[in-house]
Every structure is written in structure tokens, then in C-alpha cells.
Amino acid sequence: MTEVSAGPTAPGRVASEPAGPLLRAAAAALAVLRRAVDMVLIVLLAAVFGAVLAQIGGRYLFNFSIAWATEFASYAQIWMVLLGAGYAMRTRLHVSIDTLVAALPQMLGRLVMVPILGLCLWFLWVVWEGGWLLLEIGQIQTSAGLGVSMTVPYAALPASAAYLALETLIAMGGVILGRAPVASGGGVRLD
Image (cartoon, rainbow, N blue to C red; front, top):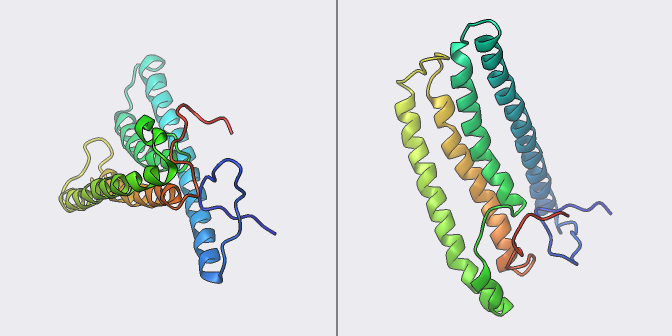
């Protein structure tokens, strides 16, 4: 049997294949989306590295500044950081203060996560809405160095807010439903 997992599982639990064709299709679509985000993050990191390296080489080796490299690196870094927030949520690497929640009984700790999930989703909704407003403004602006529409960097806000909301729902939903531990234990996981 092939194991399909929509997110990290609690210690001691085994990821199982979702029941029904609709859930299997959703799990497969989620896996494709996550793989695509992973690949975009890798490409963006390489692009930032290459642009900064080109700028440094041009400036110090050839005494020539590459005007577009700094702007390109900045926009690529914006996309990388905002999409990386969703990756961090998926792997539970965001900083959290869970001392109080960890001290509570499991059921009460899961109940406390409900309003926290609501606040997180509300914040991401505000970011998503604000990103769409920026996209409207960006349609009439062009960047100075690259000469591209400002919708390119501004699109990172609604895209990343939507992806982060999905990963937040999965991560916190797993906690609320008892499929993941309430407290992450702090620190970076090594598993």
C-alpha cells in the first residue's frame, strides 16, 4: 500500500492512505503543489545567488554595475521568503510559544488552537486582500531596473497568503483533530 500524507504526522502515528477517490485526488494534488513550491524555492534561491554573484563580480572585477541584478535579487527574495513561510508552516518550523498550550490537557490544548487558527486565517485573509489591492496599483507601475510590471513582485502577497493559509489549515487542523501533537517541543526537528 502506498502511503500518502497531507502533512507531518504525530510521533508514533503512521500516515495512511485517505479513504475515497476524492480524498486521494486531493492528497495527490497537495503533493504536486508542495513539490512545485519546493522546486520554485530552490530555483529562487539559485537565482538570488546568481544575481548577487553577478553583481559582485561585475562591480569588483570589471568595475561595472549590473543595474537590474539588485532589483531582480530583491524581487526573487520577496517571493522566496513569502513562499518559504508556507514551507515552514508545513514542517512546523515557525517560532511558537507553546508553553501554556503544552501544560494544558490534550483536549483543552486542542480547543485553544481553534481561536488561534481563526486569528491566523483572518490575518492571512487581510494579507490576501491587501495583495489584490496592490496588484491593482501594480498594473500601472513598472520597476526601475527591470522594467517589468510591479504586479510581478506584488503577486507574491496573495499567492503566498493563499498557500500559507492552506498549510496553516492542514497543520493546525491536524492538531485540532488530534492527528498531530499540540506542542511542537520547540527547536528544530531533526527527523
